[in-house]
Length: 170
Image (cartoon, rainbow, N blue to C red; front, side, top):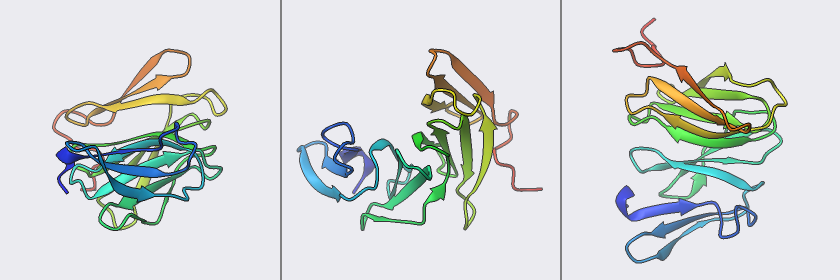
């Protein structure tokens, strides 16, 4: 189904039902969903091709789940953050997934072009500091911004002009 006519949310009650729901936007009709998520769903992000949905949740292991939207089955998780992951966001070409941690103070940049995705860790806050609540990528994917629990925003450079992060040519 084209991305323009579907949306997803973590729950009708702020993630408490531990489910992901898919909706057809023009009609408001449910397209089904996935129940039995282990912890409260925090964030969802569609891959640019519309076939995969990334989800973050309150989880002791901090896993990020990748869901095949055709079958609503989970692919192997990305072991991302201690104490759970709060936000996930895809780069426009789908080759990079960023995730932010709840209590480990980090953002991870996942190279999704590899058969086994690899993550690069960016230490944003000291471990144990309040969570990183917002995450955004610049349109060209060279910078990311993080909304911190103390109300500040941190901006990081991923790559120089004309360079795509990660640079796998080396």
